[in-house]
Amino acid sequence: MTTVPFFDLKRQFSLFRGEVLSEIASICDAQAFVLGPRVEEFERAIEILCGGGHAVGASSGTDAELLILMALGIGPGDAVITTPFTFFSTAGCIARLGAKPVFVDIEPETFNLSPEKLALCLNEECGIDEVGVRTRDGLRVKAVIPVHLFGLCCRMDEIRAVCARYNLPVIEDAAQAIGAEYPSSNGIRRAGGMGEFSYFSFYPTKNLGAFGDAGLAIAQDEKLAKRMKILRNHGMDPLYYHDLLGGNFRLDALQAAILLKKLPLLAGWSNRRNQIAQYYRREFADFAPELRLPAEPYRDQLGERGHIYHQYVVRTAKRDRLREHLNNSGIGTAIYYPVSLNHQKCFAELHARPFPESELAAREVLALPIFPELEDDEVKLVVDTVSAFFKN
Ligand SMILES: Cc1ncc(COP(=O)(O)O)c(C=O)c1O
Image 1 (tube, rainbow, N blue to C red):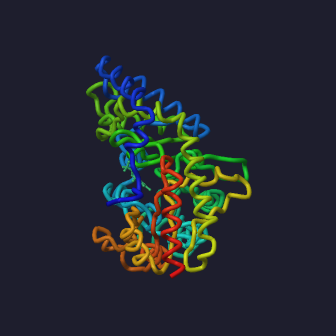
Image 2: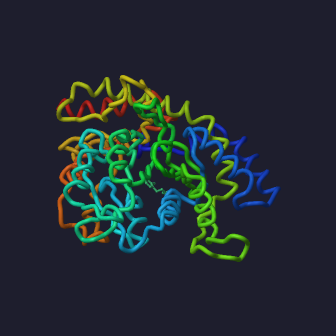
Image 3: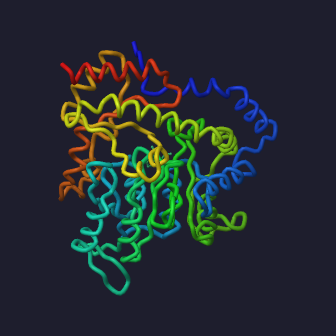
């Protein structure tokens, strides 16, 4: 029997059930389900949240990433740099288009792509010719995808500076980071508003979740955003004429309408996630260094806005025993991610080099329950159970 669930979407739904159902009814009455005014309204709302750009609603975060890579013409002979410690699709999309994902290891404190290792990779493992950057095996490096993992932004100033030196576009994977802020040297910026491109996932368990799959891509360049809109509809423009080879990556009106209803609640949900995280932080402080807590590198400048805690991920060498102990007490946990992507079988040809930080993180990470509707007594039970493990 589960005492504290890892997440429980039913609790959130019960808070605005009536409102959402009447929104769904109005879409059903209109019988207009694909793209349309709700999707456009949602695109404008996310542009405002992210501080600009041109948003393109998509059928999932994965499809939003594909749209960006396709708009950049990425394919066979190309390489895209990203992190091996992320959800599969970040690298999977690159490979699906026939390009090669080139991994750069993470920072152990934040789990995010290391700007220093990115610079090393470009300096020492790549060369520059008249066309641009090439890997040693002759592939053309076309872009870099940093992932704002678990709701904490990457060190974007440093990443952008390295990419600017090599004239490489930055594609932010902001799937887990909607609303997270970053103290850039140009002022406070939001996840999804810092790279030439970015994308979000609205998978149901994300901080802003749809009732099914949904996603969104942003391009700072208007022409490329237009191209992405054509690509998401089979490359069709005008009707039944296809100069481009696209796919069906369209966002449903129902999902956009539900997301629009939830969006005004997002800031409050992020605050509650932060409240829980700060409680964990205080209560677990005594268990260092055995238990390592999530880094909050932007706290001094941004307070609680610097991390939206999509996940609360601790690390310990005793991870599997801690997980079993929590499981025996009915407390839900999860492991994001158990396998560094260089060890996934479908990326077998990339195994050549180790990624020690990503591989160690995969052995040590454990996500504890953190969702806005968790009750205080449930949070306390998590704390007491973790504490009992480390005190014994
Ligand atoms: C970091 C990251 N990137 C990409 C995705 C893909 O998004 P979706 O599941 O909406 O396709 C996810 C979603 O799980 C994610 O967590």
